[in-house]
Length: 137
Ligand SMILES: [Ca+2]
Ligand SMILES: [Ca+2]
Image 1 (cartoon, rainbow, N blue to C red):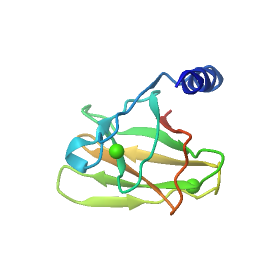
Image 2 (image 1 turned 90 degrees about the vertical axis):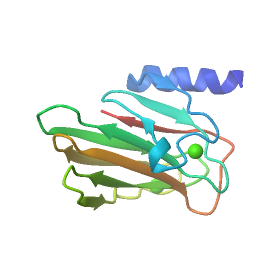
Image 3 (image 1 turned 45 degrees about the vertical axis):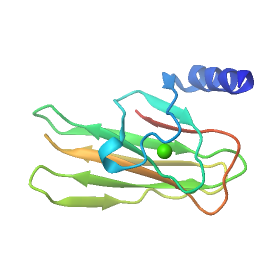
Image 4 (image 1 turned 120 degrees about the vertical axis):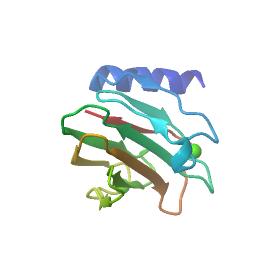
């Protein structure tokens, strides 16, 4: 556990990410998605049979453009897709480019006023004992 904290701290220093911990069993559904804000993120573990869902809510009157980033642990490939839920009820789906094992998968998105962007993180069949990181910048 101590090692994990140190690694996270180093990561935070490298990327300027204010990291926090998601909890097991947390963010498993759209209704319990973990809030993320611009310039912040999470370092956490993926467990078997669960999803980790993050959400960015644009509560302003302006469109907001941000880049989402998922850094897989060095020994596995995790992926995510984006669902932008618009106030009118429509949903836009986006898939970041997959950079494979240990890769950084990033995508720039624009979230309109009142829209919510959900980020659904999943494994590709293999879980790691190491943490992954997800953040917006
Ligand atoms: Ca979860
Ligand atoms: Ca990936």
